[in-house]
Length: 163
Image (cartoon, rainbow, N blue to C red):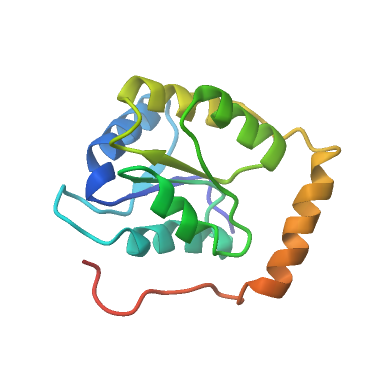
C-alpha cells in the first residue's frame, strides 16, 4: 500500500532547508518523514536520494523531496529509479509546471541556491498543482517505455555505510 506521507531526504548542503520544509509541511498538516541526513556534517547525497527515490519506485510512497546544495546531484541519481520523475525546480512556475505537465513525484531543491521563501513557494506550487493529463500522457508513456528497457527492477541500494 502506498503511503501519502512525503519523505524528505537531504545531504549536508540541504540540511537547513530540509528543516524549513519539514516545518512548513507540519504546519499544513501534511504527513512527512525525514530520512536524513540529520546534521550539516558532510555526507554523500546518493545514499539519501536512494532512500527516497527507491521508496517511490517500490510504491511505498507517492511523493518525496530531495535537497542538496544545488539540487542537481539529487535529481541526477533520483531519475535513475524506475517510475521516479524527479524535477529540480528553482522557480514557482517550474514547481507548478512539473506537476501539471510531467506529473512529478519527487521535488528537488537547492539548499544553497534557492532562498527559503522561494523554496517554500516552489513547494506550495508543487503540492497544490494537479497533473493535467491529456496530451502529456503521451510523453509519460514514452518515458515509461524507456524505463522498461533501461531500468533494472528494484533499483539500486548503495553499498557500505551511509557517510
